[in-house]
Image (cartoon, rainbow, N blue to C red; front, side, top):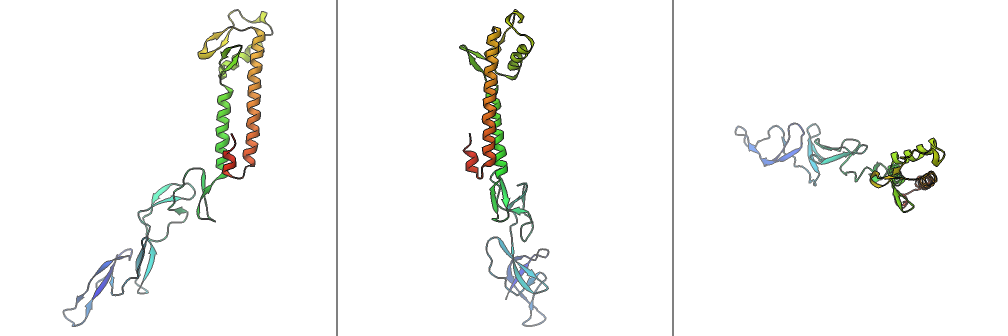
Amino acid sequence: MKIYNYNKKTKEFMGSSDARMNPLEPNEVLIPLNATKISPPIYSRGEIPVFDEDLQKWEIVNDSRGLKIYSKTSSDETVHKALGNLPEGYTIVPRKSLEYKWDENTSKWVHDLNIIKKNKIRLLLNTVRKEQYSPIEYKNKIFLGTDDAQLKIFGLLATFNSDAELPQDFFVFGENYTPIEINYNELKELSVMFLNRSHQLNTDFGYKVKRINESRTKSEVSGIN
């Protein structure tokens, strides 16, 4: 006669074995602790029969032990160690990227449009800053557009009003911080070029941010460059 063994602590099915006969009582089968003569039901992968000693029957329980599980809020990874359903707030499906959030209605990760919009705006802002401080060509010469180079230009304009007032060794920065001599009118024209570029970049950026905030899908946001 077959008996079916289960774990002392978890009561999960551990396998079958042949029962021993009672040597003192003919035809009596000895059933040890943590065993039963009731056969477990058929079960599938990801399941395990668990014996209910009070009800004297097997129940099929989910078994995801050893699987990596992920928090639906933070996407933190851990390993599931207990029998039964996953702990509340966890899934076995990893999040593809930080641009996804868990949707309880569909039970899957979906695009987090707010994060996608913020990332796009941040990317565009970085591009604006890069272009805003890039070199600029004026009269066949390349002038440095870094923050300190532009500050020098506008600082000189705020301090002096004509060529006569400019110091004799006056210069602005070219490529690789090479000194370039320039007169007062050229200084004004160069500053206007920097201002116009900055104004255009910021105007375009504001328009793109408005379009991003009005977008309803990831593809709409991705199409704004």
